[in-house]
Image (cartoon, one colour):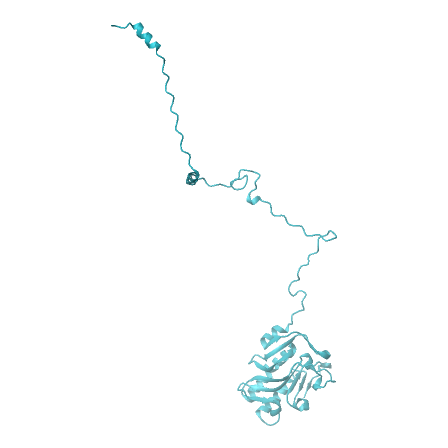
Length: 282
């Protein structure tokens, strides 16, 4: 049986139209946890930060100053005095500016003696040494030991060194065939009157300007003693007389055994000042 075309067309028109299928909705991705987020962020390379001309490194805020534009710390103002004016600054003086001038003799002594400076000495009755030295040896060719060490002022050290290096050593070589190596010192600084008398004028010993020598020690250890060897016709006696005579050119006072009983045992040498530079050599 054949179906009329009209019926077939009507049947088709009667069927409801089928709507196209809706697009498939994408499935949600799983969200990474905190640990995974950190790992991902670390794995992603980031471009290096560049200095921003408008502000600090990495800053986009022009109000943020750059490192080289930061203001210097404020300088505190000086404290005010009660009158309102800043106090005066007390600057320390330069070393030696207000100090007493150094003893010019100290540099010379380094060449002619082994001597250590001592504190100024002030004794009773006017005894004093402004710049005393503890003298261990004198002269330089060869050094002559002082036994015991002598406390003397610088001018006396210089005079003693000149006499020792010149006339004394020359006389020792001429008459004894060897150099002098030491002096026995009977006295140097001592605060007393002349010749040890309490009521006498103050001795030059009280100013460090005098020394008493009782014996000369030679290089071989032998001793030329003023008390024992002044008299006689021996090489030692001749040496002592020559040393005594030449001392008169270096000291203002030279007293030996022939000057009196007070100096029978030693040579007294000092730099006493007298009118017209008068010298005593006995």
